[in-house]
Length: 469
Ligand SMILES: *Cc1c(COP(=O)(O)O)cnc(C)c1O
Image (cartoon, rainbow, N blue to C red):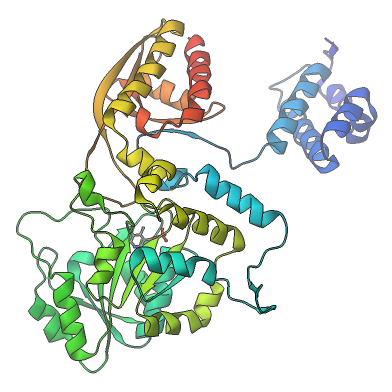
């Protein structure tokens, strides 16, 4: 090791300059591997920390070897991506913080295929004239939902905003007090209402809203009756809400459109899976509703998007709103949606090929087998933790199916030498990072959301962390 121990002032002066470092053998190697901007930043950051440490006396010896290794670390950090794949061991399938829906190979393939070069995004190949970007998803979406017309915008928050602005700008929108929801990431119905220039007209109470509450609120400035899915909470006990078909009759009688913000929006019939609480979008459309909005990356299992389906006269009006232009989706999203929606043409295939549906509807026995496979591999390697399989429940997440428990199996790891919080932290900071959930003194790896391709990465990561003691 090349190091010198001399007076503070002299040591400071002995720090190499950026230029000297760049011209040295190490500098030449760095420049051959990394962009010049990153090399400069890595050197400057390391030099500045060293200068600081020498100045305040926390370090008295300057070591060039140490400086070089700090610069190398900086280079790795500065050239790494910030957005990285993560192993989701939480069991929450539609985890908003972890990117909601995982996309299938087919969806990704279509994104690459249409993103690589040019496409007929807004070009009619038959006539050679300008085409419309929305036609690529319209036919499928109409067929799947039974709606007269459809439109996709940037996300469901945008969908609600543009619908309210188009249908009720300057007018009152009647909403039950039990449905003034806040979804994570600051989507709040009253705020969206204000941003759209519509006037919120709350009716009923938190637990009960009756048809007469809606009736009484109607006046000549009423623009819309809005129903909002209570996505992420439940009101139970002494409760009452007005069924959607009664609202539709009321709306028709008074010539007021009725809209339903479904939030998640399921394109499958879940009744055959024993889930009766979430009607499909098709069922909702069948009631004769005017406009329905829902997310693309919740239960649907596609990319981020806000789907608007319903009556042609309203959808066309919404599409003409300049806001809709500002919220339009890009070609990669359209490619992902078209590939996703195509899978729904065969519901049974969709359950296999769309990762969200596959993870949610998989047989608990399959989950148990996967947990078993992970656990037995871990047991062979790890001696300083108790590893077992436990039965537990997982949730859909993303405000979807809030009252449905999905039976699952998890690998429970109870470390002997470190705390469960420390273990959880190590999992998060590894490569790949693993996000798991703590239950008591154990860390649970819920096998529901651990993808096949994640297993080997997970095993080596766990082995590495526990081996550290
Ligand atoms: C999730 C949700 C939204 C927001 O949808 P994004 O696609 O996240 O913008 C709006 N309304 C309801 C009821 C929701 O559940």
